[in-house]
Amino acid sequence: QKEVEQNSGPLSVPEGAIASLNCTYSDRGSQSFFWYRQYSGKSPELIMSIYSNGDKEDGRFTAQLNKASQYVSLLIRDSQPSDSATYLCAVIFNGGSQGNLIFGKGTKLSVKP
Amino acid sequence: SQTIHQWPATLVQPVGSPLSLECTVEGTSNPNLYWYRQAAGRGLQLLFYSVGIGQISSEVPQNLSASRPQDRQFILSSKKLLLSDSGFYLCAWRGAAGINSPLHFGNGTRLTVT
Image (tube, rainbow over all chains, first blue to last red; front, side, top):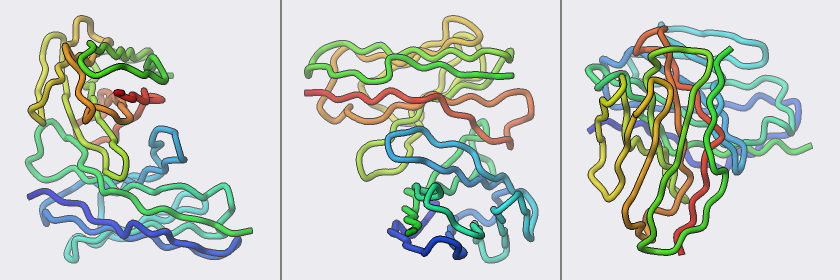
């Protein structure tokens, strides 16, 4: 069973704080991991891709991957009210047909001014 | 640059009516194309994907079908809609970067079946 698990939230953080979003996946052999942001009523937009263990930083966003623990996270530094959205974790499972992405149900983030 | 277009943006259809949603991609050739559905309170569910003209793979058996009549066109259809078909339908593409690269989504179609 290919599963991607996320805490549904809502996760509430004050403006300027660090938001930490977590995701676990079921297949230890998975190689490709993504974070998408989805505003209410809109389509998902890609924030980060990560393929290797460790941290990957892009502006205020840092993705962290630990394949041994089957865990991927997203840190948002200096959180802004405009970061309020649902964050989707997606995984391409090892052996998955044509690289199809399996999504978690998402974590809703609320950044309070 | 690559862009993806989906239409219509919203649709209200009665139960038993037909459905046709269209998606086109610009700025790339031979993309992999995908249809996902996001139902209320549920995650994104892969419905169909296509690696080329006329090549369709179904991930979930249901009363929907897909077709790819042209390289950059992907169509989702139904002959008779069910209430359970309501949801947010998203078309996505992946280009030549390989099957481990991310997907990029269109703006989606919100379908309400009444």
